Structures are given as C-alpha cells and as structure tokens.
Amino acid sequence: KNSEIIEPAVAIFSPSKQEIQEKRKATLVCLASGFYPDHLSLVWNVNGVKRTEGVGTDEISTSNGSTYALTSRLRISAQEWFNPLNRFECIAKFFKNKKEQTIEKFIYGDTGCDIFR
Image 1: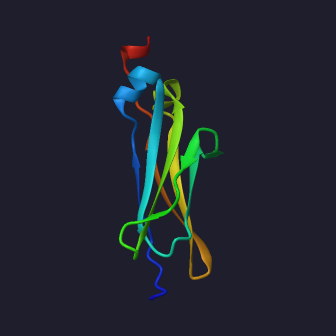
Image 2 (image 1 turned 45 degrees about the horizontal axis):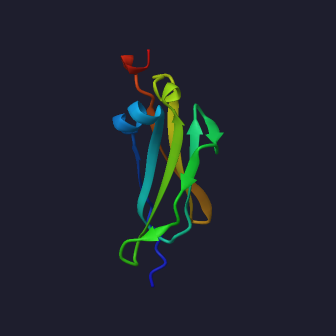
C-alpha cells in the first residue's frame, strides 16, 4: 500500500433554519474528507478559544478503502449563532513529514432575523 499522505478537504456547513426555529439550537457540521492515512482529528474553536462542550465527532469512516472521512458537529445556542462577530472554526490536525499540520476553515455567525425577538 502506498505510504503517501493525502491531505483532507475540509468544509464547514452552516446550521439548518428549521433546527434553529424549532429547537433554538444551531448545529455546525465540519467534514474532512479524502485523506490518508486515518490519523486525523478535528477541533472546534469559537473566537479563537477551543470548544469542547456541544461537540460530537463520529468515528473515522472509509468510502472505498483508499481514503477516509471524518465528521464533527458543534451544537450551540441560536443566540450564539446569531452574532456576526462570532467566528466558528474547524481545525483538522494531521501529521505530514513528521510535523503536525493543520487545515482551518471558519464561518462567522449569522446576522440573525426577527424570529427570536
């Protein structure tokens, strides 16, 4: 098997409006995909501070045996999501050339709307 290290593609998906309206919660999803080997972790930061509360990370999965994918979710209050100053960041950490590498993706909170006032 080749020992080539393939970096992940990392994407963040914003929460569904339905969840926000019904539960007043917002779940952000971070997906790292297409990486090899299966040594990778996902970390959430909110405004530069590591967040562990409300985080759920799946087991690493493989689509075809050659590359891997990992999904992590961050559940926050709707109030926290509806603040455009809040920066939500997902960081993928993995090793390449014996050094820890990171790939970071972030989104800002939404400006919000009047459904909560």
